[in-house]
Structures are given as structure tokens and as C-alpha cells.
Image (cartoon, rainbow, N blue to C red):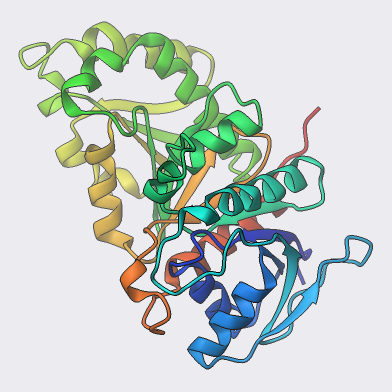
Amino acid sequence: MSECKRLAITAGEPAGIGPDLIIQMAQQPQQDQLIVVADPSLLTDRAAHLGLPLTLIPFDPEQPATPNALSHLTVAPVTLGAPARVGQLDPRNAHYVLDTLSVAAKGCLNSLFDAMVTAPVHKGVINDAGIPFSGHTEFLEALTHTNKVVMMLATEGLRVALVTTHLPLREVADSISSDLLNEVIDVLHYDLVHTFGISNPHIIVAGLNPHAGEDGHMGREEIDTISPVLNNWREKGLNLTGPLPADTLFTPKYLETCDAVLAMYHDQGLPVLKYKGFGNAVNITLGMPIIRTSVDHGTAIDLAGTGKANPGSLEVAIRYAGDMARNRIKTT
């Protein structure tokens, strides 16, 4: 049997579906130990609301990692700022949400946990509490003192990393510089080797413009920026293909031999991935000294407490986190 890993799971927005999904996952057999970073009362109350059995076990770092028994969860407690009510956002719990992230991330940095998995948070209510917060990725990037992180989503048979993420489309072209491309390719290749265990990853790179610029007739970014960067990395031994037209890149001809696609912007790569695997995809933050995966959806406040939330994405995020922890090559 593969080595059991300790995975810290943050329950996310307490009024949303994060607690529901975690309790649903507790009803399934697990390969790894799931350690939920949350208020125990939140979990017991939500389990009662859902009518699901749940037994909580306090986390003891002195005990060896063992898979959770059915309907059991290990808990690293963090106290709510206010009682959590299903479907009702409360800014008083904003600090609680961020505290759960800090506990999980610091535990990973200190090797207490092998990886962290995040349930969705609600950015708006955190900002309503007077706390500037743009998302998990930026928060963890600052907490771990990481110079450059890369967003990658994955589902069965496809991984897509992004050069730019949440930018207005009119700003994308000006943002794609040689320096940025070099940073992203460096992080992506490193983690494919050291965290996914792929010895010589094949990365396919999309062009920015239609038809990858068509020899400069539809834009010169491919000629002036993207191709020179790719050629320099090829000279260093990286297995890169591109820049290719994005409209024909996502076909079996290319994807059969591909370990990851590098898209230039958010809506170039992610619609394809989400069409292929929405609800069964995982969001992965590359470049950090810790492993972090996340669900590919939001808090779904309207589904909280109904029992109708689909745990598929959390299931995939947990599986990826455990596999990445087993594959990670330790470096000094």
C-alpha cells in the first residue's frame, strides 16, 4: 500500500458548501489522513443538518498518519468568530477563514502536513470585513514568501497552466513579456518534474493570436516574444512544442503526447478544460514550497445544507494532493 500522507483540508466559507463536501468525503474510504482545519462545532452541526454520521478525532502530531475510518475526521481546531448559519454570510467569520488557511499553510511549511487542500472561500465577505483579499493564491504566495506562482487546472487527461490569470483581455498582450514567460515556464517545468514525477515533461505552448499570429499578419507577439523564449529553453533541453494555434491545439494529435498545455490567458485554456472535466477538476498552485490543491468551483451558498453539493472536485483535489506529496522530490 502507498505511503499514507497527512492532508490538511480547510473548510472554507462556513456558510457555504465547503463543510458539506468534507463531511460527504468522510463517508468514503480514504488513502490518506484528512485533517480538517475548522471549528469542530461547525462540522458537527453541519453533519447533523445533513443527517450524516460524523465522529471527530483531535489531531495528534505524535501519532503516525493513518487513513480515516468511515464517517471519521481528524480535526485541527480553529474557533469561529461567530456562529455559522447555513447560507448566511457573516463578516465576523472572515478572520476565522484566513486563520484556517494560515494554520494549514504553516503546518505544511513545518512538515506537520504533507499538503493542503482548500474548500472555496467567499472573497466578497472577507473584503466586507475590511480585510483586503484577492484570493487563496495571492494569500498563500505572500504567506510562503514565494516569488512566482503559476495557476494550473487539471482533470483526467489534461493539465492547463496559465501565463496570465485574472486580467482584462485588453491588458493580456501587454503583460506577456519575455521575463514573465521565462518565470512561468521555469516554475511549470520544475513542478512537473519534482512534484508530478515526470522526468522529461512535454509542454505544448499556445500562441496568443489567432493562428498563432500567422507569420506576423495577425500579431507579432509569437515572433517577437514567445518563440524566442521557447527557443532559448529548447537549447537548455526542455521539451517544448509551439507556439501553436489555440483552436487546433486541444486535439488528440497534440494532447496524446502532452504532459501540460501552457495557455497565454485565462479564457484561452480553461473553457476547454472545464468542458472536459467541470466538477471533476482540480486547481493547483505551482511554484510554492508547499503543495496546495483546491476545488474548481465557488462557495455555492444556495446549495449549502441541502445535501445536493457534488463532492467530485474535492475528491479529485484530495487525490491529487496525496499523489503529489508521494511524488515530490525533496531538494535542498
